[in-house]
Image (tube, rainbow, N blue to C red; front, side, top):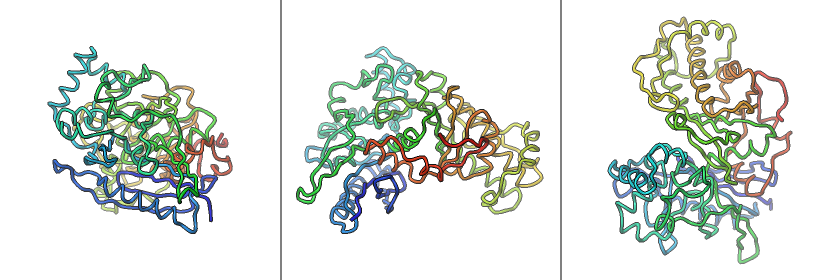
Length: 466
């Protein structure tokens, strides 16, 4: 039987169970798609009971497996989500979706109480908690909403666990909170004083599980025949950063691309400014409580929208760009054409573009789709540069790019062109979120450099990964 570490990686869309060997290589991966349900107000949400059943079912299979001997388990899951547990140890409320709107009356009461009781206006509050006003995405405000709107439910809550820590609780039976979940725009934490924000007191604080810095709990399984380490879970964005923290010896920034491009800089420890907040910057925390400054850009959605426009204009398939390679001559040509203004359609009011624009990007000036696409990427990278600079510091030497855009050679070449003073690296590291949970659980400082080399490609520089 092979000894393995099991990692449950619970995303909004996909739920995965991965089995790692002792050096962090994935031996097996299974996926589970969970149908959504609705809360008592009819708003779509995760089915927490079904999710719980899936975790328990897979765990039982592992314990009785004749192929694998599980020696440890950990969890990574999306944040801004609470599981409210009653006296019977089971969830007594829906897993409210973080996109569910909170009534403006409740939000106004919350910020008024902060202003009156603690003499903080909204700007001061969002600065100290590193949490732009995002409604239910500020998970702490969900507790206030429940207290004020659903009093009967509130009174029956024994404790409220962040989702990653609830998944651990299913197996460990240990009620804890951790820095990675508290620190993700929850409005619960005062980053300047490194403690809960003043409003988190009394019955609000009593619903939160004790904060832990421990990595795991050891449980006995199979009638006491096996000792298994059970990790306490991590917020997925913080977990995805861990392989780079432990594998890189120089300062770096991680650009995690997808629908949103999230820039994570663990080497910027300065206080979040009001200007940064207004441009969609916030802070996360690493498992040890260290701050990670972040900025966001709706990069993938803008890209997909403009791809459709280019395809329609030239009457071609929307997949036209997937086999397209970087063309230095075309890029040089569109550098002149790009003096024309680019007006994003999907980024308005987000990220570094807080002011809406109404104009449309003019595609008719291009002779073919190759020119149009090189121009589009150049414009998107220019906007990304603004987002990067919001949280950058001069001593950051390396930028890792993961996600879909890391495999886009045009995007990577243009990014390296604009950031010629830094090392720009495409990361093909598989399952970085689950790998981070694995590394943290075992207290591993990194993976052998030869194991990393095959997962990186350097653009613009030829030096080796440090």
